[in-house]
Image 1: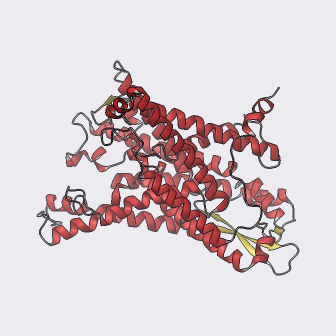
Image 2 (image 1 turned 30 degrees about the horizontal axis):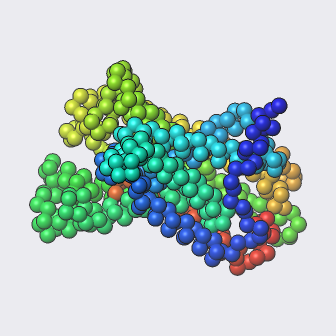
Image 3 (image 1 turned 135 degrees about the horizontal axis):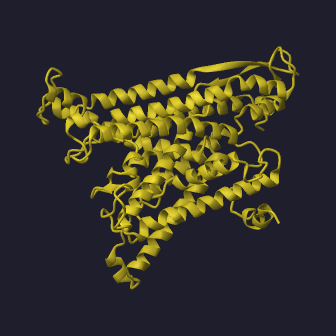
Amino acid sequence: MSWKEAAEPVLSRMPVVERPAGHVPFKRKLTWTAGILIVYFFLTNINPFGLAVGQGSDFFGQFRSVLAGSSGSLLQVGIGPIVTASIVLQLLGGANLLGLDTENDPRDQVLYQGLQKLLVVIVTALTAAPMVFTGSFLPADDAVGSALGIGTFGVQMLIFAQIFVGGVLILFMDEIVSKWGVGSGVGLFIIASVSQQIVGGFFSFSALGASGFFANWYGVIFGDVPVSMSPFTAEGLQNLLFDPGNILALFTTVFIFGIVVYAESVRVEIPLSHARVKGARGRFPVKLIYASVLPMILVRALQANIQFLGQLLSSQWTGMPGWLGTYTDAGQPISGLFYYLNPIQARTQWMWFLGELEAASIEPWMIGIRLAVDLTFMIVGGAIFAIFWVETTGMGPEATAKQIQNSGMQIPGFRRNPQVVEKVMERYIPQVTVIGGALVGLLAVMANLLGTIGQVSGTGLLLAVSITYKLYEEIAEEQLMEMHPMMRQMFGNE
């Protein structure tokens, strides 16, 4: 008996959001999307019952803009389990270990979707359990345990159940948006998370010294923040570029916005003509960022899981060898293997010449090794995961050639044959995929080094801009299809 026959009774019965039977009007799609977004914001502002609020640490803080969710909320794990499950399935599928034909066999498609859901459920439990039961990340409120008569362990079980349900909810929220809304739920949650940070970074006003960009400059101009902003002195230049001026962060944010929008517009356009409709022509765009920036989620999620393992070992293993890592009281590695594998997220982690390093024991050569590892991880990992993404999402040369063939289109001057079209696509897609993946990885590291408004991670900012751009394109396409129903039939969207 194969594994598919053994697992089919379970995988085929996994809960699923039904696809719409017919065309979903554009306004209804927007309604579903907006409704899920409201539910997302609602869940990120609810603390689990029994949690000792304000006493735990958020290790995923540096990855929070990528993994979405919110620390100390029902969506503590965010989209992390979905991304981790996707990594596992992409690796297994890329090595052809699953033996599933998800393109042509409906039975295998059901098994694949069921397997993905099962993995997400398992990873959600494995991620939430150490956060709750170690007491380091989500500590239980002993007063609640005493009042209910269930003790600390009982409160921990209660918190775990709530976090687990939140992780499962975000899975189905993503599925609702993908099938009934516009775009994808994962992308929508990332945009929401990053937008909150950016808006706060610009407009927040606080008496605790954590004000936003405009509040800081208001204080500087009107004398409430008495600091020098002269670019001709070392102190003034530092204040101008970093806190409280944050000019460098503003420049980096605007630059990333501009370069991603520009890169999205750079493309190789392959001309197409309709085989049956005379005069009907089109173009197939192979964008510079062909695989989008979504593979970066997979790279950062892998790094987040590695760091989560390191901090878990540090908090539970009192005799952990120094070569694995040495941690500060705040839970940040300052030496050892986990230090070099930890991506640089802020200037205080590499600008030793400003004297703001996290620990005095960190030497410039250690920072150099860490930066080289981070660049290699992001550039090489970005290219590799981009290739996996293209092949597993039906964007490769073979799948693209079949899509063009099924739509009735062909490349002028070539025979109307999938193999011929595939050879043409092989001239562009693999090379552009690797270049785009490496470029996105480089931009993400650069943004982290220089800093951004709202302390958004470079990867999070890249994701938000790219996903928003693609969402704009999809909305424009939906509106076009709504105005011209015949186009839905021509391109198979009916």
